[in-house]
Structures are given as C-alpha cells and as structure tokens.
Image (cartoon, rainbow, N blue to C red; front, side):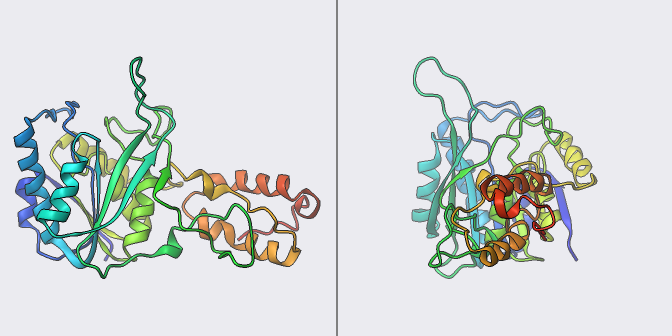
Length: 304
C-alpha cells in the first residue's frame, strides 16, 4: 500500500522510534543554521551545538537506511564540509556525488558575489547501491548513433528554478524546494513502492513527489502549521510538478532521418515529461521550429 505518513515532532526525538534499515532513500533538508525563522523556531545554534545536532540526526539516518540505500543532504556552504566529514569519516558511508543545484535568482549582494546555488551531498550506505539512470536521463543536444537515444546522464549540476511566489504551488515556507529537484532524487534512488524518509519535511515537497511517483514516504516536521500545510497539499489535485530541468524540453538536433526522428518523438514525452504535462505544448512548438518541413503538419507529430 502506498502511504504518505507525516509525524509532527522533533526529528531527534522521532527518528529513534523508527525501525532500523527500513528506508531505501533519505532526502534531508535540515536547517542550515543561518538564522531563518521557521515560525515556532529559529535555526541559530552555536557551532558546537549545531555540530552535535548534525551528528545525532545523521547517525540515526545511517541506522535507518537499508544496506543498498542512499542519502541526499542539502546544506549551505558554511557547514557542508563538516557534514561531508561526518558522513565519510565518522559514519563510514560512501561518497557518490557533490551535486550543485543552480538557480537563476537568489540573494543580491553589493559586496562580493551573489549566491546562485545550493549544495547537495549524495552518499550511499555501501558500495553496492541502487541507481536508476534510465529514469533520470535528459535529452541529448545532438543525436548520434553512438549516443543513447534514451538520453544522457544529467550530471552533477542541476538547474531548477526556485518556486517563485507567483507559482500556484508556492507555500508559506521560507525554504521550499522545487518538486522537479526532489523528483530526480526519488526516481534515481528508489523504485515504485519503495520507502523514503524526509526527517525535515517542511512544506511537504518530498511527500507530494512520492505520492505522485507511487513511493511510500515518512516525513517528520516540528512545526504544526507546516504539518497542516502538507496535509492540505497532499489532498490537492495533481496537474504536474512545479519545476522542470530546462533540458527536458530540448529537441535533439540532427534527427534528419524521418523514421529515427519519429521514433524518438513518439517517446520523448513519456521519457522526459511524464510528470510535466504543462510543458508538452512548449516541446511540441520547439519540434515544429527545429524541424519545420517535416513536422509542421500536426498529423505527423503524433506524440504519445
């Protein structure tokens, strides 16, 4: 049974109540200790206190992961190196990727360079782990026979826009993450009916993504207002995730062979835009621009 379970409480108190090795994937977006106001608490701890907090929840996360499990940890630049050391040196986990989430808008600065990215650490519990590359490929820029028509590895620099305040899915939460960002992690590192944990659930993005991708998710959230917000979000009709990697709408060049081109186009939406129906029309228009002679007739463009 696919279930989205949300626990209201302190992660440090609730995590010990969960069974060991019960999760395929953990996606954690803990407070960065930058003084943000989360309504009923502010993440402003002393250095040693914050390090103790980090060690405690990471130890629990390690215990809760299945042997082939993966953890993704969001973190700001001030503490990410310390978390890397805890994961690798203290917990003996295996480093996989240091992912950069690049966004186009951020905090403006008049002295120094304005930040335009967050960092995400990807570690596995063992050397043998699950990773579904075909589920997270991105369209090739150019089509070549030696390339995989199914697409390319997305790499470790991910471009997703923030969930802007004009977006209908924007919640009243200071650090809401884009659904497309979480979608990639869930697809890559879990299977349908897999078990996912988000120990700092916030606005409920991981729960919402898992609900649509048919995974079981357990979230823990301290603020009762955010818990209520998440339940309301889970009850809303799904019309598509609120963000998408811009490359997903890319039409590969050099698809001159009509049969090869049509075979590719017939699969593109299913492969890359399955949860982003609002982008399909934009993709179709791009096809007409790139291949105007052969694909300008709507009857020829039969996309699944």
